[in-house]
Length: 236
Image (tube, rainbow, N blue to C red; front, side, top):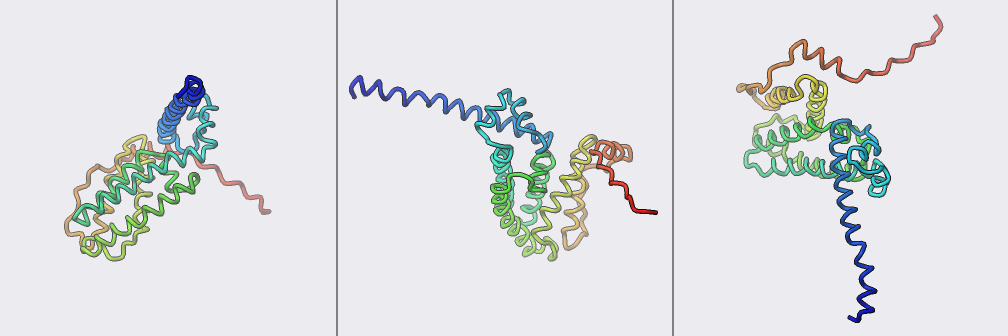
């Protein structure tokens, strides 16, 4: 290569550090978004994410054109983790243990991540990629349920679509009890698991004590206030 050719080639090499910087910024934004959405839910804004990441909001918009794109990138990975948990459950030679593993691990994931709960339960954001992840999850859950039913360890009338609803109930319980004891959802998972058995001769030892009346009151007071219904203007 001549010296003139070398001088011509060098400018083409210069953007590489910028690309590395851009990727570092992208990962920094994703980490900040994970923390912000986990604690505040998807109501958090890109300004909130930028502030938490310590970057300008323009940097966030250069990486992600809107909140939808950021949430898709972040939660596709989270939902992919749930698919992986189902696949780990299927790898367990004991069908009942595999199903319980998935329910426990997915419950813990949802209980600890407010933003993920909102994405999975309400599909307000990330419809495209998240929808694909959901489509991947249901077949694995179907296999978990079918294996356990064929083994005789799960009641015959359980349906695969019951499983995400069980997870939703546990996730909402974790949110309700967040101010006092968010781990109490495990107690109710144990009760539900006994209910999944064809025979309940052997009851599971409940891993958490019940909430006290004071804790229930604290949980109620901590829940966001619901808007008051509009007054009726019907004639008397």
